[in-house]
Length: 217
Image (cartoon, rainbow, N blue to C red; front, side, top):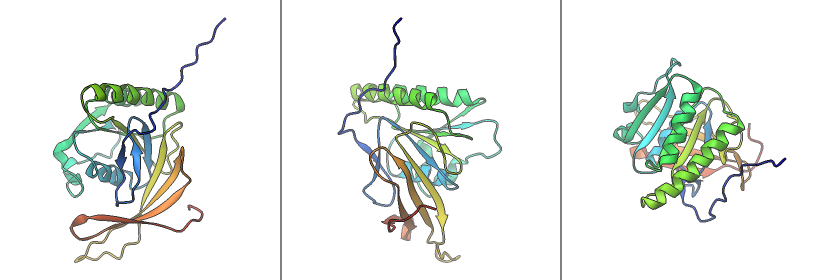
């Protein structure tokens, strides 16, 4: 009896990345699936929109009370770039994400989930993103990027990297808005955990600085 084992394709070392906000020199490898989590995960997703161009698909559930209002993204990115997709079951969300990534037609696919998915669904998303990268190459487009949005500290198995965003004390006033966030890299295949502070300056520009090494609370 023979056993067939499905493995993920080899990822090209020179594959382009989608920049992270703040001018940090960091990015998310395209053609793969990453995870953003924490209380400000929607904000981080909006920041990612602002770092790229083209249409963005935002996939969300139809059974949760919270709803994204697209115009609320205007402070970060053009809401006209957004296509909202709603599913009635968790499987619907993953199917929509797979098909969106596999097509290679859009550069960024955001999937808002109530709980982190298991390894098998994430592997399917990776395979879809790899297929989408090949389709995009034939269309003269950059490879697509898949981003899972999960609550608390996340925990999706098999993701390329995991990032956590939370508000930080900012000193903002009614007259001067200087929002700050704490960005943690919780997991990455080739990099250790690390922390940065993101700061909003005049005109909504974002800058960032790395925090000293230490435990990530």
